[in-house]
Image 1 (cartoon, helix red, strand yellow):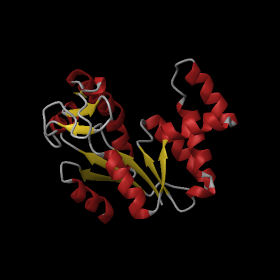
Image 2: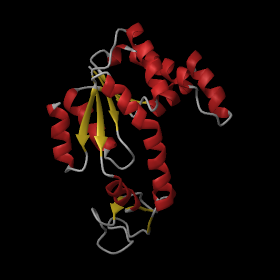
Image 3: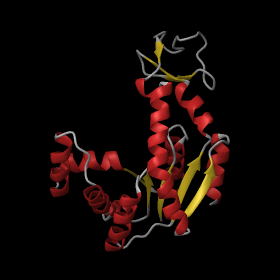
Length: 211
């Protein structure tokens, strides 16, 4: 079983990815992890990717897909895999469609976790992190006992740069621009299932498992 999981920043995609992998015994495939592994292993594809990364350039879509395909051909993924946040664009999806048959795979289902934008903004801008131990909080959903003080170690809590309102809106705009065409792409192939991410975590998980 090959499943693709899509979702904007703040949709809870990471949490659901962990549950899907555990519930259905799937291998977890993160593009970033695979790229780093290929570079570390110094595979031929990894060496090509490193040339782009060393120059601060994006790794071309066709090369990213080739690295993903190479990884999926490994026996470790024979029982199935979850692709987390990949593909990100229609171009990547088209390359992936061409590559998968070469390793005897096809996409079974694309899950798109959908959350209202104002809810995403609230979730992301409310996140706080301890500067000492790294513990995570949220000013609304998981507030510390004392404002801006970590419950665990007493360290100061801060807001990450990518969780400021301006940055959050930019991240959501980028996701919308890249992903809306991708959602239509998979919808036209009758592969897409929309998940209501505004629900409780357990209810989201149940909807995913039902699908």
